[in-house]
Image (cartoon, rainbow, N blue to C red; front, side, top):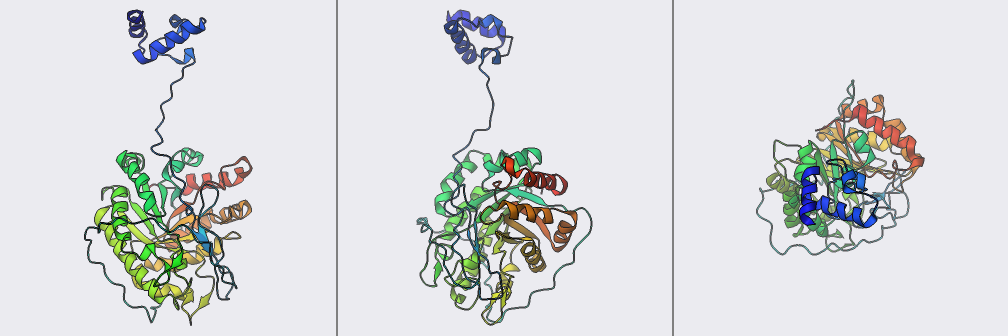
Length: 435
């Protein structure tokens, strides 16, 4: 019997493992003779074989932090926090937006997991940021350029979601975004490296990678704030993260948005006064981590990630609002590019314009993650209708905007969101580029 099946397999150019089950199924059903299967075709026996890229590990939805909390001040009054928490799983988006008057703190997220006991390998001696008691003035901004604007478009919250998205299929993206929320993410990220996914499916296809580093957790300790970003253990974790995402210096870039929405990490948000000790320690970590990525990931370019609300007010006496930027002047001058997010639930056009202009003197600018905070479709449609245009993007690229990250596809993946999807797809086709 088996000799007979082997001979059929050879004659029909079928693999042994396909021919035997096919034949046996035919015998059981009694209605499909193997002789009726055309050479090389197993679909005739209702056994379609599809080749798909395996899903390497379940792509974890970023912890309760795929979306950082957002507090957006809306007036010149002293800003305060709203209680919007980082992206919880697939249902919410990251951000924190300072909103006016009363200071409500975002709900505490889980304390970061334990860090490795071993010390990180030595890195280049980081340059210490000069004291910023007297903030330096912001440099003059650039002027817009004319012509057809070009942007590297990215999609999150993780590369495998971007890879199989309708947007990427219709209008290939030049970059995939991944979120790092703490040490518990390192093991599944390591599996992407070990399987060859990062090397083959991202860098190997000519795409850049974008890693957004965000940190939740309670605001405690001394100096008061989220402790993981200023801890000794984060250096070892960043060494491992850099090695996971490392690519050749000659290949596509690894862009790192470090500590997105970092203005909300201390116990007193969005201003220098009251947070001097925390911000000073955080600045030192920013420079150390930049040096770690440069050492272990030859293709890495590093930025710090501003919350896009910061220019909505100014409190010169406390170093708040726009007056916080000069306190980070020395740090930004040591970064490879600059990042900010735009996640207001009512409108983002002004924030995008103002932040791009303010950051442009420090180098190229990336909008790291855009999405209305509560997934508001009306806001998304109004925003992209205004911003995905030649005139707006010419202005922004003239100021140095080079990349635009869609936080996820939740605002353009449903039948009721066809208008949003069309604008996003058309923009990717018209303005999108690879690194």
